[in-house]
Amino acid sequence: AAAQLPVIPKWGRFEAAFQSSVDYSNAVQDASLTVVFTSPLGDTSEVDGFWDGGNTWRVRFSPDQPGRWKFMTACSDTFNFGLDKQSGEFLCSAAIGETRFHKHGQVRVARDRRHLEHADGTPFFWLADTVWTGACAAETKDWELYVGTRAYQRFTVAQWAVSPGDDAEDQSAYTGFPERIAINPEFFQRLDAKLEMLSQAGILSAVVPLREMQPHPAAAMMLPDDQAELLVRYVVARWGAEPVAWLLAFEGESSGKNVGRWKRIGQSVFGSRPHAPVVLFPGETQWLFDEFRDQKWVDVFGYQSMTDVTDDALKWTLTGPFAAEWKKEPARPLIPF
Image (tube, rainbow, N blue to C red; front, side, top):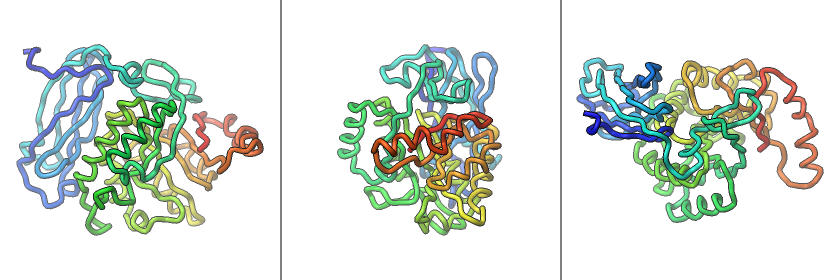
């Protein structure tokens, strides 16, 4: 029986596909899928599945223990017999592969809360390129050149955004009315391949699900809180098993609306489950650090330190007002952008 089971390396990606027995007019609005994975030691992990077009739904999961794993699905539509109460097993082997993620595992915040490391404790240094819309907009051949160049230059992170904006096929992450969006799976399938290129080059993807920086993109600002949360949850479900960090890139304003909006979204998506590091990047409104300091699901603070590389700018980065951040509790790694 074991010979029939899929074999996934430790810290690799297990993927299972399910066929919905119900045709939904808007799948991500009409149904949701969760999957509980049980480790060889009996520990459980719950992750969201995601719709991938037509009647196909998928779940992706990264195992961290060798041995036999089991899973069981649950669908919000309990009459959907293709999605609800589906079970399966797979075997997890020892870690194999050539990239830093194959050898050392996903990236996390270290126990001292002051730096990043891999799952096996190997330190991870965040040396990033801010490419924002590049992953979406680039043609495949141009993205291959970009990834190869950055890997040669020993970058470890690419910071890129999913939405708003169109890709090389003039498609966006979602369509429809802001009050009830429809996810575009073809858009995400093209990004799957680009994220995989980064991972195979040993480059972490710091993904912005929904970028809301000044000047505010009209499309992003039109999304109500529940639809913004749906988009973020979809992105996390699709790529949560990959070498990623989640970059929340938004700026505050005088009314405090964005503070409450992203506290609600973050707590709902990240608050109750283990997750890849969540990096708060508030652009030039760094006062948001104090607003989010008590949010345990925020793992890292990122601040906009400078726009040039003069000696004075570098000195300010190390000795300016953010030097005091190191003394504040709870401690968090700081990333100057």
